[in-house]
Image (cartoon, rainbow, N blue to C red):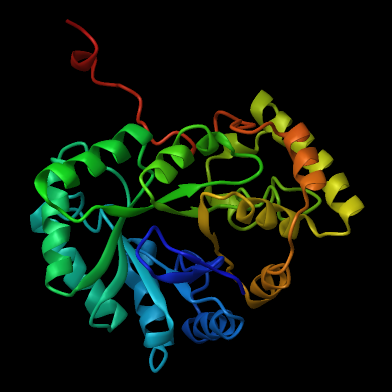
Length: 338
């Protein structure tokens, strides 16, 4: 398993990272099997495990904590905060009040003394980024976390965070976590260049695009797709038809290259120079085994050029994919009227 340095932190991480979103009630509720999967990933050379407080209401963090018993020092442990953890409106966001509680809750569930990478799951428009970075910097000085990052930050939000850290003397975001696949290349145009300009590492998720690049005959069916917005898989939608057409061409290309479609898809993501690690998020052991089998696949320029011909750089094949644009629409009329 090859390694890269994460965002100038000096921390070496494997190019494959294990995403733990599917461990717990949201995916695999069998704790013992999930723990064995984490051990399998570590034994294969993965050293970065990424979870979040919100995944299965904290259950994912509990599972990860159990799995790392006796192996904690081997692992770069990442988790996230910021999405709602209850009905109380103060149990979310980027306020110092919530961050101080959220990190202690995560440390308890993970059963560890520190978190290597603590990420803000979404930007919080209601909280001054200065307050958020100040609270996170305090946690670094207290030894509870080692480095901080963002997720789903638009380029302008990432720049604001970097400049605020510099002006106010805070620790700065070292990473950005974004969705990225052959079918969702929009982040190549602004998000990745912004991260590179500020020396930030990039963790990517969704390399199989919610099953579209899993190699299934019918990518519109499947366990995970059942819980997603049906518009993403409705072939009456032009964007969905465009994705289906692209997948057919990519499937033919993978066959010519002698590769399973998932191996082509993940190797493509790993090939981008901005990417530090690609998160894989299996639910079952056989899925993990299939993904690990492609860890050594490298794509030559000829294959990458042919991918570009199918899906041009910087293009999202289906603009309606629900997770592509991190900027919410303006629904409050007062924000757009004099």
